[in-house]
Length: 333
Image (cartoon, rainbow, N blue to C red; front, top):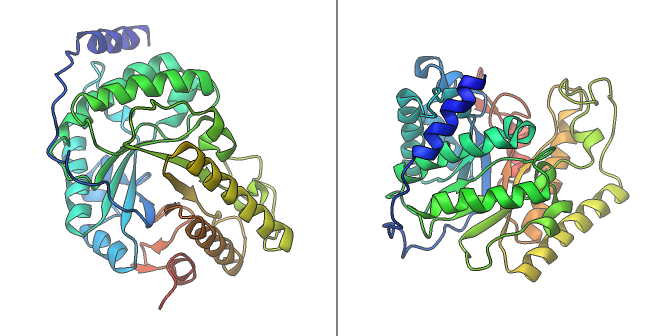
C-alpha cells in the first residue's frame, strides 16, 4: 500500500498542466435539463463489455420514455494502475457511453462516484481524483455543452465542509485548464445533503456550475430493508400523510430559496425508494411521483436513482420499464 501511495503521488507531481484553452463549446449555452436517470453504476460492462447488461438500445429507450439526460455513475479508481493511469479499455467504454447517449439526444453528466474511498482517505482521494480529471477532462474538451462533469458524488465523513471546499476548488481548477466554460456539477458534503448547501463554498467568478443535492427523506421509508444501512430489519414504514407531503414541500422550497439567494441553478441528482425491502410498488411510485412533481414545481431538474441494479426503473430481464415507476416519473399525456 505504501508503494502504491508513493507511485500515485509521483504521477500526480509529474503531471504537467496544459495551458487554459478555449473549448469548442465556449459559445454554446448549457443544456436545459429537466428529467434524468442514473445509469451504469453497477453494470459489469466496465469490467467486460461483452457482459454488459446495458445495451445501446437502452439510450433510445430512455429518451423515448421522456427523459432528457443521464447521470453516468463512474467508479473509476479501480480501473487505474499504480501510476494513476486509467485503463484504455475502460476509457473506450466511456467513449461509447458518451457517444451513444449523445446520439440518442440525451445530455450526459459524468459523475465520479468513488465517494467511499474519498471520504475515508482525503489524501489518497486528492491524488486519484486529480488523476481522473487530468485524463477525463481533456478527453472530452471538444464534446458539446450537453456533456457535463460532476467532480465527486456524495462527499462525507472525513471530507467535511472545510475539506471538501478546499478539494473542490483544486479539482475545478484541473477541469478548467481544458474546459473553461463547461458545466460542472458540484454538491455539498454529508452525502450531498440539502442541509449542507449553506456550507458549500464555490468560486464566485465561476458561473458555469450546477449545484446538486440528493434526497432520500424520510430515510426510514426510502431505505427500509436495505442491507447496507441500519434499516435492514426495518419494514412496513408508510409514506404519504399530510405531514409527509408538507415536509417534502418545505424541504424543496428551502432548496429553491437557497438557489435564488445564491444565483446558482440546482439539480436534484438522486432520489427514490428501495425496491427490495418489501415496500409496495404503489407506495414507492407515489413517493417518486411526489418528489419529481415537487422538484418541478420549484424549477429543479431531477435524476432518478436508478435505471438498473436496485431502486430499478427498468427490468433488464424482461426488457421493459417497470411501468408504475416509469409512469410516476414521467406521466403519460
